[in-house]
Image (tube, rainbow, N blue to C red; front, side, top):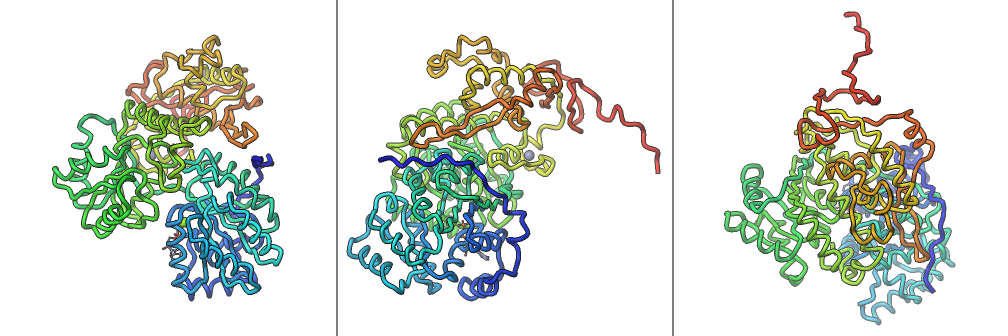
Length: 608
Ligand code: ADP
Ligand code: MG
Ligand code: ZN
């Protein structure tokens, strides 16, 4: 019988700015601080750690978005230590679990794990301990498969719960729950059963990467109730971003870039295929760099050897697939270069995030070509893209099937539109994806677009906006933004044909626009809420999709010409198809439809 998640109103509470969680007057504060020092050897708490701990210890369901390396583990290990009973931790990888257990045992915290490929006798012994009256473990780690497949485990959890010994349930790497995430793991979806069976036990969900739709999806699938969300800014001010057109001379360009900017410094070059990794590494060696490759077909001893060499600075450059990176804590990675298009903005953000952990300036370069897009798209449809270890083993059978394929394609298209955007701040674009508003003035020219685009032309795009809103309405408010854009630009692919969109009068209405232009207008009217992006469960198995809907009250203003939309385009660059190019200095944003010189209505201020 398939598990059917209940559709609940997603209601979460923003916790990051709530003073109450910062308080040092909780009954456990003294114990908390003492154990943080004594057992974990920390002098203080990192941002949000105290807040998260206070909220989860108060019994709430909590969702934590904290960058990799931010210190998520402490937010459940410390409560586990000072609360009576046992904390159940769901973690996706046995290697991660073993690493955690090793650290816990070193700190004298009794912990154990159960996984499917463990000796039965060993499992029996752990289960017996769980059954005993004075169960010694403070933490029990399991993989999601274990929860999904082992009735024995569930029965033991029920027994613990009945004896009031199940203190807390922790879902680490919680974005794996969502098909929108880049590491979807089917077994994570079944974890909703835990909240059903143990409604009174607080759940703590942790991740370093989640967009607004992933967040909603996770909260729903896990069945979290009045969940408190702690989220930090995902902006990394010391990383410098740029996208570079990819040519045949790509590796030469990379060589030159490294020699000029990061000579003898340490970095990662992400490549699409195993073959690419080997070729790029070989070429860089020819150019005199200490480079090596790393990918999934190497055996684990080889991989460990390469990683160790790199960690010890015996080699500077590692050419790797996304299989490389989990649990890497090297602080002085000075550059992350993407030799080809990443599969999603989330993945891209996370991969770039491995640079500059020490806070020093570091470079993130992305080499983009449209033909790489075709290549990645094909590989995704074949299930042939190497996955990050979190999703590994699930890629081949899952990645090319139905909804997951659609999601992957959608994620890829968003990445393409990021690359093709030569106007907006890269930080703004990335952070928007995580539901975070960013003022591009704070970029301070640390991305290619901000530093290049000095003058703008302002264009009235109201008519385009009207057409897009109309198109969303005409197609029944059930399609994603990338699909709407395809129809608007006149695509004739199978999906468009199947839905007979080519008969609509707006099919192809945006043909004359540049690739990036229509998508910028669409993105803008979503940000300004003329359209809303809605996450919906689309079938009984709970798969989700993101669809555009019309916000009628706002759309009315547009249709009745009460609002006009003006966007800036770089000048005199390529984007001159919308109208005549008139340079205006990059000052205050215009909101009316006409080009008004800045400050034209402002009376001269008397000098003081
Ligand atoms: P995450 O799971 O968020 O990626 P971890 O929990 O693995 O991060 O922690 C990353 C590193 O930060 C670990 O080495 C950990 O010991 C350290 N750390 C966590 N909290 C603190 C703290 N309050 N003070 C000092 N170091 C900390
Ligand atoms: Mg972690
Ligand atoms: Zn910028």
